Image: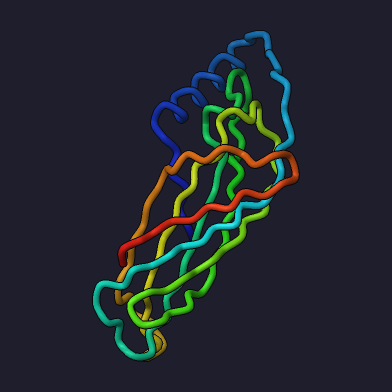
Length: 161
């Protein structure tokens, strides 16, 4: 099960909002905006050393609204929406291409914050039932704007693997 990382300032803000609501503070409800679309993500891998025979390369990507676009004042803690996708790489010699598409449909306080994208590329051995990890690369917190409403955004990353 993937873990969700919530920053310390976001936790503090969430706890403060619960405390003020419990103390009888007047609740302000900011307006919400619907955002939707698709992120098409391509990973272009430069493989530095030969992978063992029978190795599968997998790419995983995850998006979540940038906390700058969430209204957290005077609200009960809620789950932050997350969307994920995975794909298998096509390996040719010392390079590989892996693609993943992430559709999303969320209510956010403001579309200004866009999303935070995280990804992981993993090479796993097909030998045995445990599928041991051969190699991996990951990155978190890449800020990306929302595409036009209902539209798509193509993102491409060159990764030395």
